[in-house]
Amino acid sequence: MSRLTSTILIAVALGASALAQVNPICDFTVRVRVEDRVYGGQALVEVLAPGGSLLEGSGINADGSARFEVQSGATYTVRVSGPNIETTSARFYIMGGELNHMEYVNVKMETSASETKPKQETRSSTVSVGEMNVPAKAKEQMQMGTDAFNRGEMPIAKQCFEKAVSIYPKYARAYANLGIIAAKSGDRAKARELFGKAIEADDKFLPAYVAIARMDLQDKDYKKAEEELRKIVNQDATMTDALALLASAEFGNKDYDDALRDAQRVHLAPNHQQYATTHLLAAQVLEMQGRYDEALAEYRIFLKEDPTSPQVPQVQQAVADLQAGKH
Image (tube, rainbow, N blue to C red):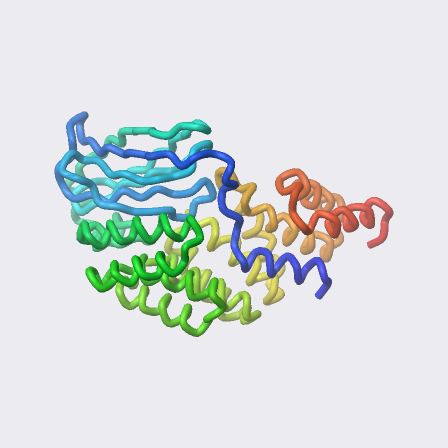
């Protein structure tokens, strides 16, 4: 395995970079309506990042609203689901510099035909409807913990997430956040245990499965990671971070045709630039197949999408070698 290939796998396993901190945090309010009236039933509102991964989910208040804090200067997907409504998605752009932004999402009540379908077909696979039942005090601790985490105050964040699960033992997201803190501290065994607790609390909470698969990939257990990530992507094809990890696992497992296919699928997602590393996977496979012009194009796209990456010198050398005919 070449040095560039090894670097690619490590970079993807560590995860796509977060949105650059160049725009302020925006108070984003989503209001759910049905037939232009406030929807007063149960609904789960989820905000997905530009790459398709879930940022946060919340139930709605009595006035049909759900509030989130997101970074301005990006396009987000809002997905609304619930026991008696059709799952609805909409995309909204929040201008850079906005501090407050509100959008309405109009939903439709399920028809008699759709009511005959099993409920899991209309539920989000990344957050269960059970998360709508999180008590207000647990949500408050979750928000406090998230704020502390974003400030780099890990002991305070850990304390808040622990309080959240003490209030609501089925709070899968709080367990997963504790797992992330454990992983950041280097306690991988504890991180796996906490991600496992997230799954025990809610076996539909896919981000916990993704976190475990990411650790398998970091441990170079490509076969196990590939098997788990395939299951995740089959359940929710919108999880672009899982798809990018799957391409990396397939590459590490020498399933090169699958790796090429899934790397290219990643770049059909909105704002796919945060997954630029998968262009390198595609380029490596194309080189192996003797498709040098296509490989060169993939390298160039990577350099355009992620010009500040530490991998740039290696990629530039790979481009120079291809242009010189050094196959």
